[in-house]
Amino acid sequence: MKKLLKGLPSRRHLLLGGALALAAPALLSQSAFAITPAEIKAKGKLVVGIQGDNPPWGFVTSGGKQDGLDADIATLFAKELGVPVEFVPLEVNNRIPALTTGRVDVLFATMAMLPERAKAVQFSKPYVANTIVLIGKKSDTIKTNEDMGKFTIGVAKGAAQDTQVTKNAPSSTTIRRYDGDAPSIQALVSGQVQALGGNIFYLQRIDQARPGEFENKLEFQNLYNGACTRLGEKEINAAINSFIDKIKANGELQKVYDKWMKVPVHKFPDSLEGITFTAS
Image (cartoon, rainbow, N blue to C red):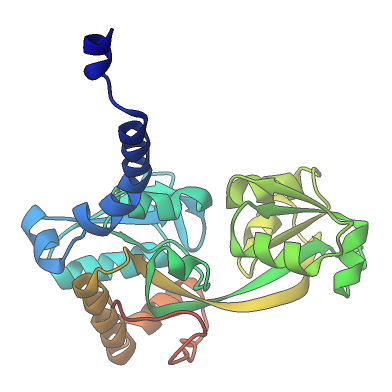
């Protein structure tokens, strides 16, 4: 019996093995998948995580082409590196996992710059701004946060609008969470919910299905979007920041704004609380 037991791992070894297994994803995301501009050039393409169904930020056309504001910015960055871009369409909830597990090199994916996210990814300087709003029927009275308590509200699970609606609505409010922007918008236009947390461009999509019925009711938060790389990846972060400075200065960013937002380029902050634009 002793001989048989001798070949088996001890409880201590099993516990140690389990701890190493749990730590492995974090170790991989910070080392095995680290990538530099030189490595991207060597492999011959830039793999970009982007939203697949959230116009005008990122969406796939009827012809199967990835398009939108983020797609245009990512394409310009790939051109700066001298390589073609390959897009990987992502839902809201799998954007950060796709980056940290090495599925994509960088995110240009409507990534609102939030302190909690900055613990998991490295943000670049901001390159576009957005506003988180509540959308409801024109016939419904929603003038204050307290008014939200009378309605069933939809949100894209894990998105900035989920955070803001949850934070601002009364505790009695019914909030329904959906896997992405498109399902949450569909929930509103089909009557599954009465109001919807979204961004300033949601209304354009809602009007296509239900013209003239809805309007922006409340504004919760002005947000800035940045590109995301993995923590500690200094070279690619520096390259993206230099690129953003360049397209601000040479007018390329304004061209993208003119195409998709039709407003002047926002004045971006030099810093945001709880977020650093430079990898350490």
